[in-house]
Image (tube, rainbow, N blue to C red):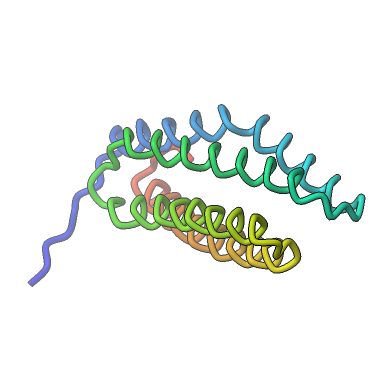
Length: 144
């Protein structure tokens, strides 16, 4: 017989507030990196160093986010979803390492395709986890 975690409204509110605050602190940088990347793609550039520069910044940003998320203790009832969310980001960081190596090996087009696939997989994991966290928060009348 499995025991169910009791979700405390105050704990879930503190947790979701911490996630929202963290998200807001990275929003401007994320938007800037996205704009830089899109401009590079739109330009048709094949300048490997430009792509490596952006991918390294993305890697650094996401690795820092993983570190910050590790400092947040999820409340009872959302541990698994928090872990899934963090793992989605860790997967993206690992993929960015592979992408950078691919570009250094002269495989820019393959690297860009790999990045797009990795982003899609990472976003799916993160979105699924966050939907579950928000569902749990709503179920106890928490802030979302």
